[in-house]
Structures are given as C-alpha cells and as structure tokens.
Length: 357
Image (cartoon, rainbow, N blue to C red; front, side, top):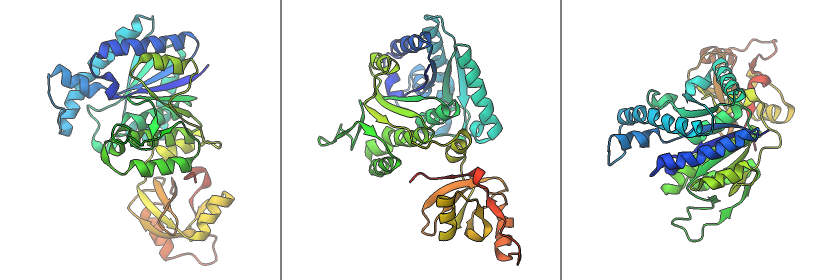
C-alpha cells in the first residue's frame, strides 16, 4: 500500500472544471480500489468564486479574495463530492490554517483525523482556510500546505501537479535555452535551484519557487516528490500506477522524524540566537544541546518554549529549536552568569533541528 498526497494547482482547474475534476476522481478511485490511500490538497476556491460572481478580474484586496474563496469553496467541494460518488467513494472537507498545525497537540489531532478518514476509505480534500485566516496565519500557497500534510500523515509520495511537464533551469516559456531537470537528489541542489528561481519574473515569483520549497520540506521528511504535468488526468493515473514524474525530488537519506519535521517546517521562529563557533561545532558534529555559554546575541521577544532561529557567527541559518528560557531571562543570564556553575541548557537537542547542508 502507498499513501499518496496529491496537490492540484489553480491553473489546472480553469475552464471545464467539472470535467477536469471528474478525470482526477477516476484516478483517485482507481488507486483506492487497488488498496492505496490518497489525500488531496486542492486549490481553486477563489477561481470558482470569481466565476460564480462573473468577475472579469481576480480581486486585489484580501477581504475580496477571502469572500470569493468563501463562495467558491462550497462549489469546489460539491464538484469533488459528486465526482467521487460516481465511484462509490466519500470525500471529507478539511480546511487548515498554520495555527492548526503550529500547536503540537493540534498537529497530532489533525494527523489523527486524516488517518481515520483514510482508514474509512474516504478521500480527504484539503484546502487552506482562505475565507477566514489572516495573513500571519496563512501558509501562503497550497504547495507548502501539501508538503506539511504529507509529513503529518507520513506519506511515501507527494505529487505536485502543475501546467508544465517538469522543472527547468529557467522558464521554458520565455527562455529557449532552458534545460530540463529530471532528478534532484541532494539539499545542495535545491539550494542552487532556489537561488535561480529567486531572480524574479513569472517563473521565480510564481509557482516554481513554492514547489521547490515544498520539495525541501517533504524530502527532508523522507518523502519522494514528483513534479508532473496535470493537464491530462491520464498522467496522474500513470503516476499512481508507478510511473515517474517529469522531475523527481529524491528523499533525504537521513530524514527528520515527525517531531523534528514539525519543528523545522511548521513553526515560525519568534526570535534569533546567534552562536559562537564552538557552539556551532558542538551542535553539528557532536549532537550536543545548546548551552548558554555558546550564545552571543539574542534578537526579538519570545516566551519560554517558543521556537527560535539559530545563526552561526556569520549570520547564516544553522537551524531552529525550542528555547527553554524567555528572551528577558536569556539576556539577564548572559549579562550575569553564575560563577562556578555549569552553563544551563538553552535548547535541548531533542528540541533542535539543524538545516541540511
């Protein structure tokens, strides 16, 4: 049995949306009939809402976008429900915000709910709660959401369906010299690709940047990510039968566990700790906890047991962890160390995750 998470982008649900969803539903039902489990992360609520309102342009204010999503979400779910009913399968709507996953207990509850639905043979249909979530609680894109969901349910495969056949070195729609990329095997390759995607333009600021970020999250959790052309549902069917996508992002050989994946990718740091070289070496090479003596600077205001970003002496990202002290306690302890006592633990190694190098 394979547990698949499939993400369908907005560009694939334009035009004859009902017909397109019918094609995808046939693929999902076929996989479920073979004994696999499928979780769907879908975009499209805003687009359908705009269609129902006969809007010629996408709204440009947050409130209008949220209102359009509120209208379109019901229509979107109705299409998936009718399509899956033709194959004797039920669907379940799951709307998530970042706050739903940022709390460890709620993260576990969300994971448990999805697993229960899967055990019942139901297709969970997940979308971000665009109608209500404020900007600071949003994931920002369903690519990121799909990767976090894949990690939460410990999926084996994440399929990102888009309107191009694979990843390219640049946008093939404007660059005739763009080279196809079939495999990405190491975080360093992702670093290079992300730097190239950040150059701007439609290719950089649009879909591919977020897909690379999703691939980083999922592969770090031991999940294979397939980027593929979803304009023809037959391509999805082939993927669910074991064929490979246009670009395959291979899982990290030493994946993060569930708790460290949550810490690394779901939580947003509330502050920063800059470390000296000795502390960095102890964390990276000896599996040590972070001690107070290794902290050289504290930035931001945060409570105890909140996530903080860890920086090396040059200000480069080292990782993140749950700080045992609040920011005021930490500054006070740095300014007035207790002589003769051992240095207290600031971030325990069990609440620490380092960035892949």
